[in-house]
Length: 332
Image (cartoon, rainbow, N blue to C red; front, top):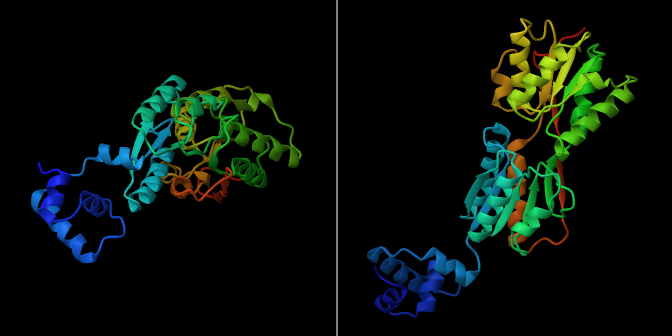
């Protein structure tokens, strides 16, 4: 295998010139660049990525840490990130934590060893101190969807508070008065904002919140199923239920059918997120939709600007949601 010194000798140039051609840098004449590239092609030369990264102090990699790769919400976000990164010839390393804080810490330490240039993370943690302690001090961080306490960094999220209000207002406008709510995972900012939006919307509509109608979920199907079973077991069940994401909605549908009931004839069901699941299950789910892939794209743009030295203070980008009415909720 030819070395950079061999390439320089064969092309009749310095090793510095060969390096500039390999790294697509300026200050090389078109004629010289063409000559070096021809030699590189003829010899099948492959640059040593590790050596290059040590010289430039960059690895051209971005790490993305998410809590649940089985959730289409996060896989769609990753697609948005990868599209932006690919345009800059930057690789994306994805790590899944299964909403496990220990796994998240291990993933962050591993990524630090790999010397990733930047981190985009949807953390499973309530507090963010471990994130800054596990990555190098100068690593740009962008928070995605969730905002752990005590961590100042760029943030991309949806207006979860407003989204919950939109669902409540829609249901009240359809005649519903007993509206159940299946929460997301405790300690996660997204779950907290959605619950607060639900409670404030009820208050504005002149409805008294009922603690019995608020049950614990976990952003997963099983949490949605168990939450719905609790609501259906009440002496006076709700006429409609809001779930905190599509996966919880699928679990809730399962529970409703297990009890021999149907949507929306016996109970209405609406949720956050408009992923493929929402428009494929029957009945098609009424949702508040987030611009999911755009969230990933914006997160990547923010982190790339950090790498280019174009940003200083932490920025927050709040994406708006849209209500999409389908067939899972009826007028009462």
